[in-house]
Length: 188
Ligand code: ADP
Image 1 (cartoon, rainbow, N blue to C red):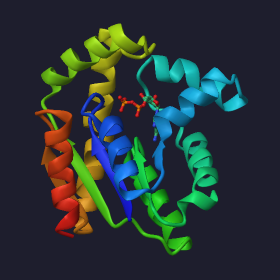
Image 2 (image 1 turned 180 degrees about the vertical axis):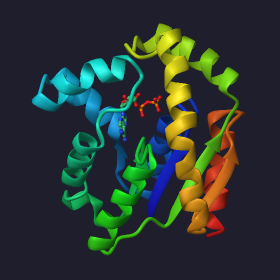
Image 3 (image 1 turned 90 degrees about the horizontal axis):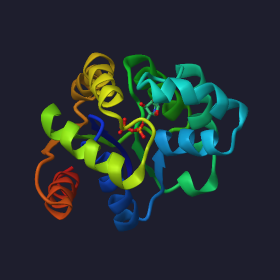
């Protein structure tokens, strides 16, 4: 199963992708996690990405695509994957489509977790206290939400046009939201 999880920052994409990865036994590929690992390891990519991430802007398509292309070549991807944090704009969505077509492994379903931006600000303020992510400050969070609305929201329509879109309500417990996602995936 090849799934894309869509949703605003703080919508719970990462949490849900981790649970789905265990349930379906397929890797969870998070471009945010891959980038944070590169920042931590101080690789060339990480050094380029850090200031962009801290400002809540998008890292360049070229860098992120190169990183993802490499990750999708690993052996563990043969049985499918859950993509979290990618695609984040229409250029990335088109590029992913082309890459997966080449691999003969198209996306099966995109699941959007829907949530109100004000709920997000509260959630991320809490995460900032717990995890100390450097891009969870209130100002950066607001910018990330704006970037999401301007650049990532159109990706929802991209999968809608392909009739590969499911939407689930993102408020509730982790288990409740997970059950909704599992439900829509079972219906496909
Ligand atoms: P969130 O969804 O909560 O914003 P992520 O971990 O997905 O968190 O992303 C954190 C940051 O990493 C983004 O704000 C952005 O700077 C960078 N990033 C992650 N994925 C991408 C991507 N596909 N394209 C460009 N930048 C990305």
